[in-house]
Image (tube, rainbow, N blue to C red; front, top):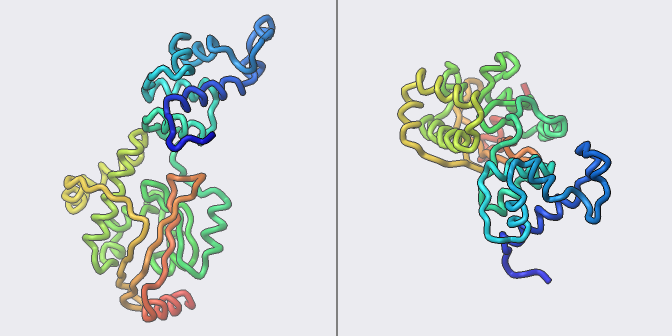
Amino acid sequence: MMTRTVDATQELAVFLRTRRERLDPHDFGLPSRRQARRTPGLRREEVAELAGVSVDYIVRLEQGRGLRPSANVLEALARALRLAPHERAYLFNLAQQRPRNANKPATTAAPPLARLVADLSPLPAMLMNHRYDILVWNGEISRLLLDFDTLPPSQRNAMWLCLMHPEIREFYVDRERVVREGIAHLRAAWAAHPEDQALTDLIAEFTTRDDEFARLWAERDIKVNGRGHKMMRHPDVGVIDMHIEVLMPLQDPDQRLVIYRAMDDASQSALDRLCAR
């Protein structure tokens, strides 16, 4: 019978027990003399040894006796139980802890996402990771913004372009709002990815080289936008106003699929002329 609300302590207990019982002892290279088992999976003693905690701690967790494991203990249990990424996230949610990012930030797009970006034509689209690195793009967005193929990989970053690229610096009509919102996103990403040294180095570079970034970063605004609009001064077609939708792939939640659409008929006409070239 389904209860109205989740009893997180009891669900955590059942989840840990079922995941332990699903493990195959042969996969852990346990000695054959330890294979005569009355219950499936690993023993509590074995999980305790793998996770580096006491057997009593595992017993109390599986009995739902009100423990609140730390993030470090949850990491150890996730490794010991060989949890898949979605199971690991579920474990942390039940324990009301915030999981560390187990995967390195993507520097290339997964093939299905790369195909999706191409298939979105004629809508301008690109895929970025959490630190605004541009991973893949279609031809339409290259015509709208700039040809990313001409840039070295280190400069294919939306915030770097906005701050450092001589053309893009003057591209946005409401430049301060665009920069402010980008910095608020970066601060949220920085807090969520403390292990990402490349992101930390990028922020240090921006703070040192750009006074505007340093000023706005110090304000500590936090915001992650899912949609918005940007008005641009395009050198070939004039002012063009674009609606922006940002989607997060379920299997790659640290990536952002960014899709541009014209806000009005005049902007659509300008975009059509631009893409026709």
